[in-house]
Image (cartoon, rainbow, N blue to C red; front, side):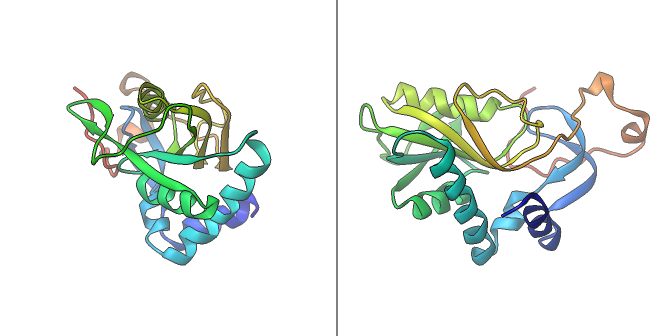
Amino acid sequence: MDREEVLNHFREAGALLEGHFLLSSGLHSAVYLQCAKVLQNPERATLLCVALAEQVRKEIPGEVELVVAPAMGGVVVGYEMARQLGIDGLFTERVRGEVILRRGFEIPKGTKVLMVEDVVTTGLSSKECIECIRAAGGDVIGGASLVNRSGGRADIGVPLVSLLTLDVAAYTEADLPEELKAIPAVKPGSRNLKK
């Protein structure tokens, strides 16, 4: 699946948004990719994750034994990636600011894990998920995301495979361009910002 096909899926789902958005990282952006809208259609989710799983098989060395995704955004894509790879998938959760495993999930020591996200911007939530996986005994051999909006600059500490890489500007509050200052910010993501 090429870049334009992936973008068309986002456009058709109404998931490529323009305006003024406050991201979970605390940064501001004129573009937001709402993966939940793309993934709400099971057929579309399958198509995208089949393509991402093919890339993972080509680009991540070694056999993946388990998929782990950060909740909330990564749950659906993580589940579908696990299905496409024919392995189990589980997810981490943020409790009182800490990323942890709950619900009886365990990672056997040395298990080869693929961390899966919906969107990578700064890589912070990916790194937090990877730290949790390692603390539980997993060996993170790579990461995967539907979208890497950092232009490929986000470093999560392991190889990252993305179906779509975009270079979307993100700004601190102090660096907002005038056109964004003129529009009220909307926070469409699932995670509350830390104050």
